View (cartoon, rainbow, N blue to C red):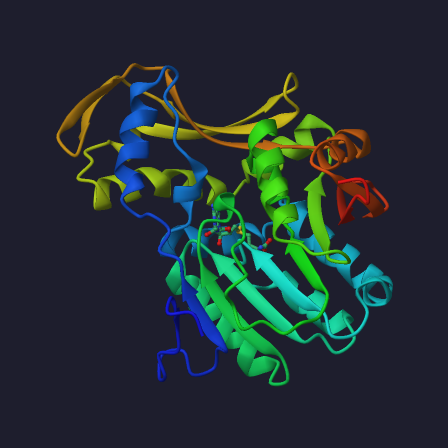
Length: 334
Ligand SMILES: C[S@@+](CC[C@H](N)C(=O)[O-])C[C@H]1O[C@@H](n2cnc3c(N)ncnc32)[C@H](O)[C@@H]1O
């Protein structure tokens, strides 16, 4: 077993391996200082998911306005038998950005005797707990965890993985959080970790009427607002920030030029603040751009996948075309 792969006996007893690739944590400060030095100011969404942010995200997935999770789960339920046929028995399922590993259960339940599940997430604590629950609930499955940044490619070569067909499961339309060039790099990183016969099962949210989209990112109970503001509270807590969160309000805006929902923190008043001793200023009406969620049409998704050497072999949607799942395999020409 590779020396980076720890077999810490008590903490990871239920896991076949825990591979800590030590995704750089120190970059939080550098990225925040860089983002606040830009015009307009911006923050990187990867930092949403500390323990508090991950818990709020789980609340978002239950909101009436947030159709994404329940629609994707319903599609997974419906297409389970088809997925089982496509994957065949003994599949090895890898989930980059696994979070609380909820949707994966639908997939594991649908597949015929899957051999292994590997959760991969940048947030180690959450990852380990979620994978241990999977290991407890699926005793026949080899379950491992990788703490890593999935934008750096998937490094699986050293892991003691079962040998079956690999299915990379990337639900939730996380692909939409990336600018087009970064989305291509991400998919390309997945493809490079694949062998002939492996596949990607990926969720992609659809372009639809702006009112439905805006409501999904600006719910009546203010849960998404809390999620967005948690980023600022995290900066205050962890980086010595002095930002007045009370003077910021959450905004979700549909940008038709780029087919994306943008989340912003809008300054309700002028304020000066510090982060790690560096001074910044926000003018009333200025906003901090915190997240993009790009939405796809069937054509725009296919173009993205084909541009990095994938064929879209199957696509499934709900009756209202709110959300789609796609089955990709490396094109034989790639
Ligand atoms: C929105 S959750 C998705 C959870 C689950 N896959 C689902 O669809 O329900 C996104 C997860 O991706 C993780 N994540 C975000 N950026 C990441 C990165 N660059 N590398 C690894 N994990 C990342 C977060 O920590 C979080 O747990």
